[in-house]
Image 1 (tube, one colour):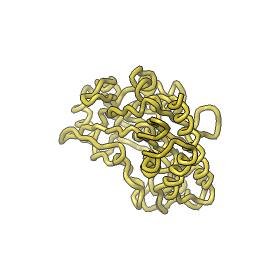
Image 2: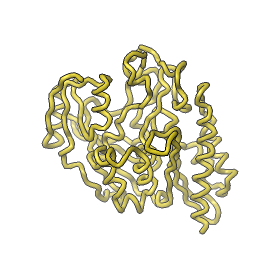
Image 3: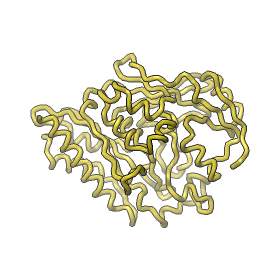
Image 4: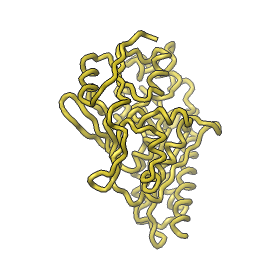
Length: 330
């Protein structure tokens, strides 16, 4: 591991200033991903700016009736918060589906959004990777890619985003707040992750040096009946090979509102807006749920080893939406 300087920030402005003073610095939250990448040499920061002590560890009501979640709230505290559990149950389920209890106690909301892909070629310094070294190539396109992207990928990168939390936040239209040396800013999570295209190393729309300060969840009555379902390759904790965050408002057997987002199928949590358009106003039937999934997955471009994900996601969507519709009918 490369030697590095360590500073603990006392306030948000100080953290931004410390990072701005060194373009080779990184913010350190829980460190559950960054430190691992430092050990393998993928990340080689000259300075770590520890933001864990900043006053960003609260979950509070937002002015519009939603919830504001501080960037240093731990995953464990987020999952356990009574208002999150009551108003956005899919978010609690998504967080609990990720990692182990020990990791959730350390990991933070801001860090979760910025975690890097688990593509094996990204962490293998002996193999080309456009995300790690722009212009070097993508080993996964012709190599091992059974767990890689089927939506929104390009010939330059087929890696997927690993976050479970981000999938639920995407379904509920979360907004990311940040601070820069020029002042605060916001960006909807739907625009937070950049399209892959030919620049997979540029992952987010955050300005250089920006510190994530929190995430705001708008009020969403439909979210009260929501679910997160994750498929993984082993029973103990593992990253998803496919996941769905879904919320459904059904009245008189007709879908009044629907939210749907997919995980582990793209370089970012994937909001399934085509599927939502098919669902809204349609009878809440398994046939229509399958039609909604097909509408979204029509854009899928699987590689030779990951075509199974299209069928997996279709079945997940139908199963989760059917369960939510049955609950609404009781």
